Length: 235
Image 1: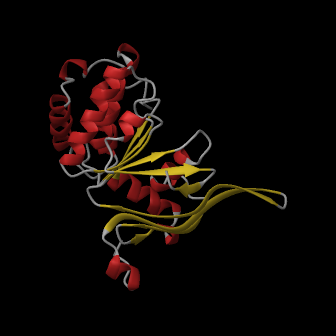
Image 2: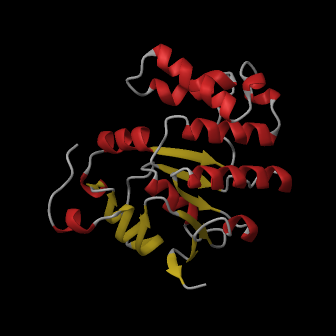
């Protein structure tokens, strides 16, 4: 897809730019808003933390950024791509090519080994099998999980599963990593290990947006935004 020309194309320097983004559910004549007038920019190489109480709209915002949710209004630019003008297939293509997602509940496929879970996102791309094998082996080595490659998720601890989930999210070198409560199910030491890993990935150039309730983990970000009842509010 070619970049869109025009005024926005001239000034965009971020990975993400949202303009008056809103999401609501319609019940009869009543609209229940989940997100209200979200205007936000995330620059390349930034580590952004999103905080707020349960029900504030944090996970919904992350799902929209990750193009997993297309039912919203407003403007969303990913680099210079007007996501709000793309069809669902084009959005899925952007997601697969440029975005890595890390979930609180890991979302590994139970019937696949660690090796196969890592190979899966590469299978969505036009990459030769020999090259894919090399990338998987390099990633196993990088994350020090070579000895786990033939195990299934049920044979791993929570911390090990999340380590594999992060490895899977970054194996294809995404432009953007989205992390939804990535340490929520982990012990403190395991959580710190994951956050240090995100810090290193960010230092290596990855743009990261994380959702967390933990103030210690939030501090790993360069910037914190707070959501309350769907609005961005000052802390």
